[in-house]
Amino acid sequence: MPTKRGTTAIDMRIYKAVVNAVMSHRLPPGTHLGEADFCELYNVSRTIVRKALQRLAHDHIIELRPNRGAVVASPTPQEARDIFAARRALEREIVPLVIQHATPESLQQIRAAIAAEDAARRGGDRAAWIRLGGEFHLLLAELAGNRVLQRFMAELVSRCSLIIALYETPGSAMCENGEHQDLATLIEKRKVKEATHLIEHHLLEIEARLRLAEQYKKVNLAEALSGF
Image 1 (cartoon, helix red, strand yellow):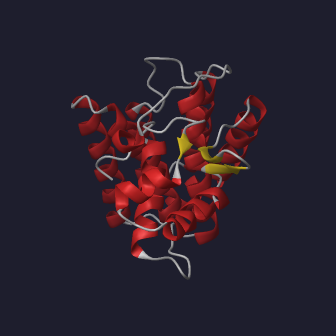
Image 2 (cartoon, helix red, strand yellow):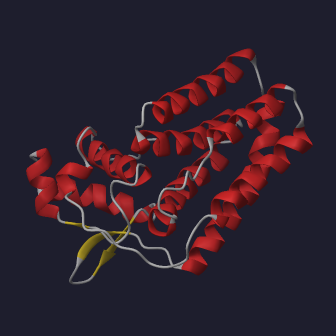
């Protein structure tokens, strides 16, 4: 995401660490995010932490609750359906634009992203695999050449990661690399109708694998943010 006015390097680092941890499913919905923990982890003041938390709340990654502080957002089943419906509508617009603006360089970027995702899968790094799967979709939004769509996609991908963390079926692969491979091939062949159909089917399949029953896991904040 573009840096907002008044954002410093350290609160942006905290912001990105939380977003990456959410997208990697290291921070599941409902996790409490204590200001003191961030102060200790990053050796910063509460003012800086609060600035990062405010931005995370603005982007619907966390919720700021009275008397409880910050918690990772917990979308309801109906919110989950609405968010996936919005994402399908958005990606149906993005894919044709990717094809329209495709260049040898952009196609190479797509293949490189898939290769990184596949390497994480083969290496057994599920957290990285999940995160890279989301970043693949963000790359498509970037290559579409529409900054407004890109901004909306950044929010929706993060919110979908929350939903998947909350409702995923244990052991399931939520974003199959093979489907990304097929989509890349259709983009390279400039098959607009087929690629648009595939991205919609892809997202419907992800949603279909979800179990609409709340599950909460207690996590250690320092462990969840390690590496970020």
